Length: 88
Image (tube, rainbow, N blue to C red):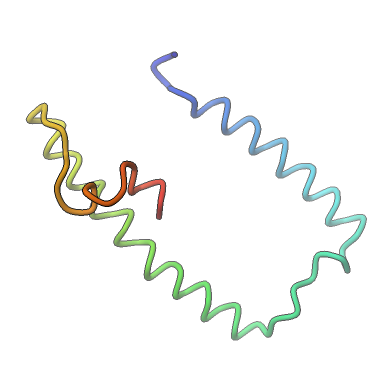
């Protein structure tokens, strides 16, 4: 494995997937419509961001402290999830 890990491969596959979805969306636009009001979608999106942001930020700061000390993190959110940043 390279120094970059699996990131480049994942990004490449994600870009191809995104291009395919854009093409399909252009061809069959009406099939991809979600019957939700704009306000309901906005509220749902804000709720997901509010719930996901702490799950992303807290581990990011916690892991930095333990990496500098060379220790394995088993406390806090890492006691529940192996990779909490991915969960967010």
